[in-house]
Image 1 (cartoon, rainbow, N blue to C red):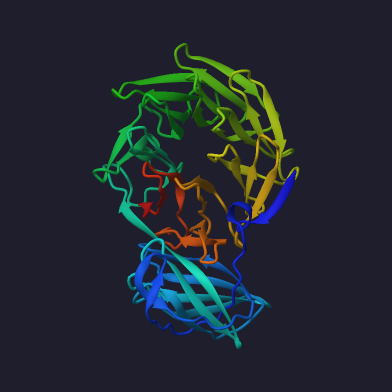
Image 2 (cartoon, rainbow, N blue to C red):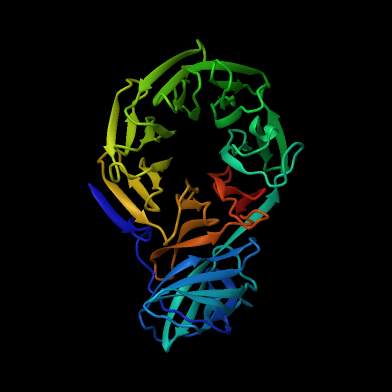
Length: 456
């Protein structure tokens, strides 16, 4: 069974209704979001315009603007007032644009005053004589430059994983330098330090393609090999010793490392279209043939493996590692959909992105029910992560944005986007967010343009 909702439905129940314009903000006294000594005022009557919060107020990103998409009205002028918010917060209207014949994008420039993460700010916006109110969340991130010997100033991560000891391990994107592609970068949150862990990779063109860690702290990487033996795996034990494993992948790429409770290391193979399992004690490799290219292999909370298949018949495929039996859940449209970025939620559901439609999907493996959640227009979702509160976060490297949900004062939920800190290169092109993950503190971490960014 398939359902299609906005991302502000089901898990994110409700859609925020508002209206818009913008100009100068005013303040008085009151409270909001637990931040006392703020602004409260009686909001004016609203006209029922529908507004999406395209970008919320994000502290620590260097961009304190808010972007609202207002439907049902076209205007080149607006006024804004702060109805409730932290002390000292003011708003002025920045740029306005009209992407369609019944739509206005309004940028609000914010002086945040005493705003802090968790606050909600309510604005009233008037446009062509129509007034509405909108609630906008305040979020905060901290940043640290990724810096260690041999790393470029704009280090870009392909993956980031939380380790049993509370550290984070980052692997480079395939566009990184030789040092970056042959190493993992370790970040210690306690000391705020970065260090480079070099792996015994000898050929210049070879590169680490994925990583995983077993409960005993052994780190595994898959390597795109260029010798006659092909791609291979390397393990690094906590004592620093390495061991390499050939996996029968000449002229091919292996990726998507993951583990199962029996100690086997699982991965996908590209050209051969196979899922394989390595038994480290013996070095034996067991292949599992697949009918479509397998990607985004993960282990679900039920202990089973899941991967995405696409092209002719897009699907999410479940493998029972004990029996080797598989179960297929067809998703999306045949020959069109590209499911990827599989992520397991704590309730057992499997979430993934659909890049062709810019949407996020939820699959219930017990019932087969699938639910699609629509992101804001123009979104290009790339990675998913759940924080410790099981709030969903979605990265969009194309637009240098994050998407997440927030609770409104009316008890409903809505979706907003967050500007990715410094997520552009020197020539102005997006460079993240990438390597989105849940850190050891249960908060969201990601990388953007050489910065490690941490949700506060």
